[in-house]
Image (cartoon, rainbow, N blue to C red; front, side):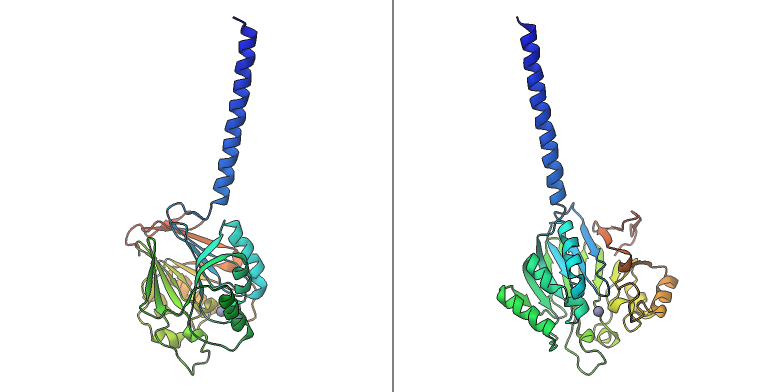
Length: 299
Ligand SMILES: [Zn+2]
């Protein structure tokens, strides 16, 4: 037997196997990186830093996605980048809560960059060119479109999307667009994410009481016409998300809101500090600092 030949043969096989394993590992690493959007069994929530505006994403346990608002026009590019970084290719449900530019300004870029399953809006018509362009893009792309009202709910896998408002369209308030917002509660197991958009006091009166929710996306960027102590007592959140731009000219968040939140012991997370990520397993929720809350009496 020629041992030298045998050794060379084994060496060759070893090198071949080694190369194969390395290649497989590289492919696995690449695949897991590109499939981030396919969730790991929980519900993932993101609130993005889009400057002075609002944009939140849910990645459902089955990988489906819900994007609520797209921030202002000048934040659109950054939002698209963030979504792509998360591996998002399709938005299954895109929600335009109301036609103000700090919520639908980035829609043009979102519609141009992602496949869209369907779109919901509040049904409040403003005569702004921004909303007109949004509608004409939806028409051109032939995207299914709806205007659900309070009482409507939609099952998306294990997640239930409930329409809390509008109950009916309101006219004659100081800011009608805000008072006709599309407000959703995203429910996974025993955890609720209440997304108040820019709802103000007048609209709130039409939909009381609000459901209890572990996570509350505060209304109207932390404005005092959107949040007060009675609302916090009604919803009783563990987390409150304040979505606003650094040094904004409106003075958001208002100091009354900041005071009410801190005296209630609610964990406050601000988008101006960067993307917020919260995960729910249906029972308890956790946020980047890995602190778990809601093990007992979660909601
Ligand atoms: Zn707004």
